[in-house]
Image 1 (cartoon, rainbow, N blue to C red):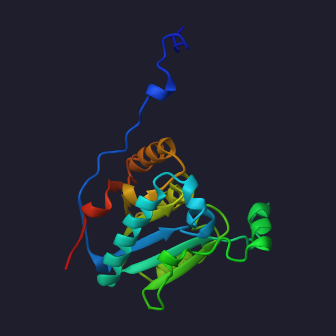
Image 2: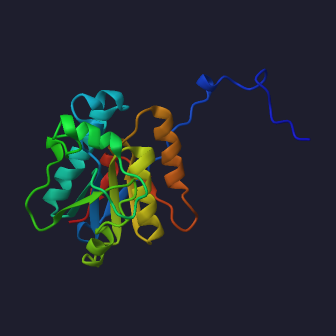
Length: 219
């Protein structure tokens, strides 16, 4: 029988450090690439709630930098956010978010740093689950953008809605780029573990791990 280890000879979990994947420099064609900003809303990264997220301020700065570059290059930008609106295909409704909405109408709104502009190449896609492709108009939007073959995914929460978004694009055959400093989790462990899952999602559909300052844009 195989020896599966014991508490006596296994190292304490505090000594096991999982580091993020090695980042790779990437160059993208702005005409064929979109920037997707996931759930940068008050209930995750509002002024008070961001305190419970790991390195949220750094992540926000990195996303802001990418957003500014994307706007300069006139790239397509998609802002997705979670809403408490009932989806008829769901079996349960999000009571927690509904309770917050009763006391704070701003709950769940995109934070000021990431307000979409009224321009033809910026889009807002609401969702009611972790999956941006589950009974939303994300698929319809992509069908109207046939030139897009690459998606840069940023936002929060890394191991929840960001992961679902990355997987959704990967299995649809898009080239997916994840700037690791521009996705935000609640702790270091969730961040590192999920980044590794994204990087080896499958042999056919891996995502490229990079950093925001390692992404260059073709002229």
